[in-house]
Image (cartoon, rainbow over all chains, first blue to last red; front, top):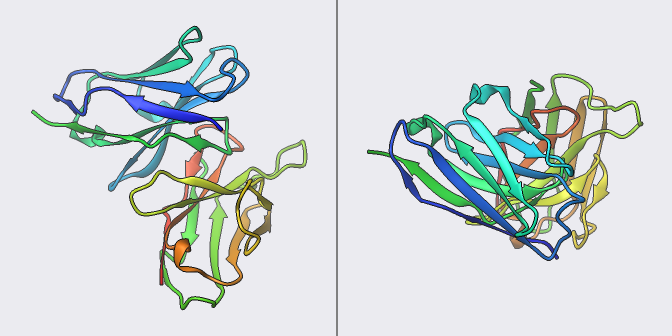
Length: 114
Length: 111
């Protein structure tokens, strides 16, 4: 059974960059899509973007080019970078496997505050 | 983006009674491959969402058969035939026909 674990700072200052990593176990890595989703009281669940099985990214345009994703297949990890954060980026960030029909990690709360 | 609208937003059900949640999308979720890309998730208190139903009507592994999904085009329903205490939480529909994938607002089910 796949397990996904998010890691990274729980507190980020406004205007700085949010960086998270998802470590995958119990699953083949290079045959699946890998996705980031966030959840906040104000906006609900938001799809941030995904990496295809070949590593090609697909981002949500609503993030205005602030998002980038990458992967390290040797470590079965994939990462999220979100630049120029504001308080509106405060959310629980989930990593997930799939291109729909998701298997989710437990999530990590990231607070943007000075 | 495809807009997903759920109703009701909250539901209080007596154990053993049925429950029904509606989800409507702003456009048809039917793909040329004849699959309809609508999933249902349950988020129990303090947990991440878990998959209940995929491609409109297919129960995920381990999901009790009291859960069923139906619908077509842009109109979908999740039904619980007999609600149990463990069904408490927030139910979300999600479309994965096109990116960005989008979610309904969620329906909170209480006992």
